[in-house]
Length: 94
Image 1 (cartoon, rainbow, N blue to C red):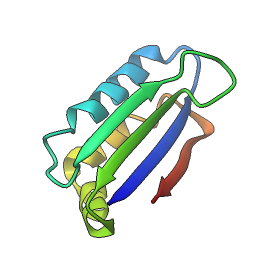
Image 2 (image 1 turned 180 degrees about the horizontal axis):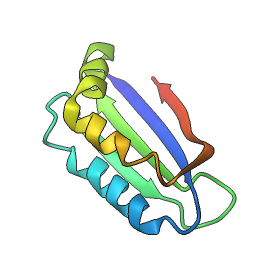
Image 3 (image 1 turned 180 degrees about the vertical axis):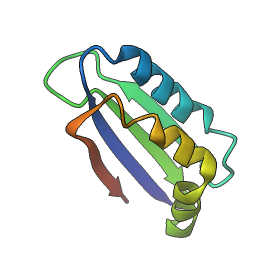
Image 4 (image 1 turned 90 degrees about the vertical axis):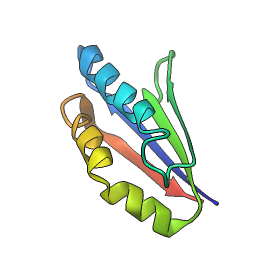
């Protein structure tokens, strides 16, 4: 199993765009077969990342298929407007 983790910081005042992006990520569960399990969480405090995605895949090949999937790319494009500089990343795979 491989766990893919991504964390984001968002610009203030972009709550509508954030919601659209995070809801889009949630909607990919059950749509892209390689995505075995995923969770999207929002930080309610301050001083840390604003949101995080954890996504499980059978292995690196399945992650690469997911990343290349047009449905994933369409949702990922929604992240650009609300994402703060230096606030998209923290990507890891274990």
